[in-house]
Image 1 (tube, one colour):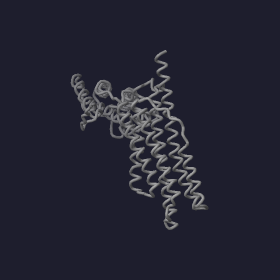
Image 2: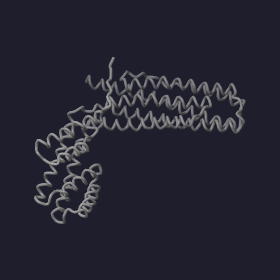
Image 3: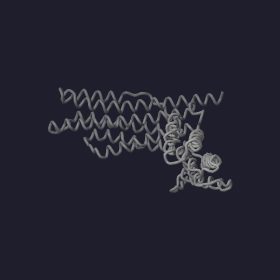
Image 4: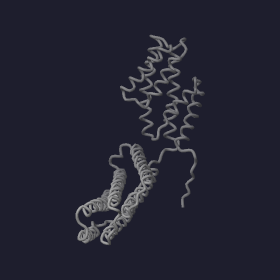
Length: 368
């Protein structure tokens, strides 16, 4: 049994603090002033992944060279008053945007103003000293990001995917049950919808961070492809839940317009078949979660249409007693919900089969 100690300080917060300390310490050793700018540079250059640290460092270096060059040119040729600083700021922003250095604009502007504010006596020497301070902070952030608490995005990603699937499956199930039981709670539905949308977004963000961590191996990593597909699968469940909610609203509105007629026994049998389909979905979804997140051997499950054939029989019996617009409207709503359940179940079975084939291919490659 593993116990996880949770602290109010995330890894990035700790790394930012360490980077600030390192930057200030190095600046003190080298006796460059003002040290506070090294700390600011360190804070702005801590990134969520090592890959982004290197990319950000390269962008910051180029952006800084641009801003310092502009600042030194202005300081020598024009002056360093308020108007000159304002014009230099506009130039720094424009050129950095032209090169696509959008993440570095803030630091570049600060660097330009910082250099222009240097004393006019020995202006170039002061300007270069102030540039060194920025690079000290940049180097401190890069070093800390690599050494201190290197991120383990796979663990966080799998945790997120498990939470996403648990919440999404529950959301889909509740949507279907609300349709069956003629229940509707808009506030609860929309709150849950936002929650699962945010989980999808966060899962995609962490997948990108994990891919960055893998570097050049990411395009060929089978787990990455499986995780991408798993997020897409849950995203499809989100859309199915939304469609089912719309079908529920239409069904309730239609019944209210007609005085809320009693539900026939034949139609109750149709709804029971939807419940059976929902039970199949829950079982299959659990099997898929084990295969994707727990690396369990996936079960090969054949496509079985017996449940949907049963639904067709119940619909035929129901159609004998209900015809015309009443049948057509109710049938359209039931068909939409049944299709979403069937699509989810078939998609899971195909996904399990593909994972099985991927695992076998990997084993054959290792043995050869």
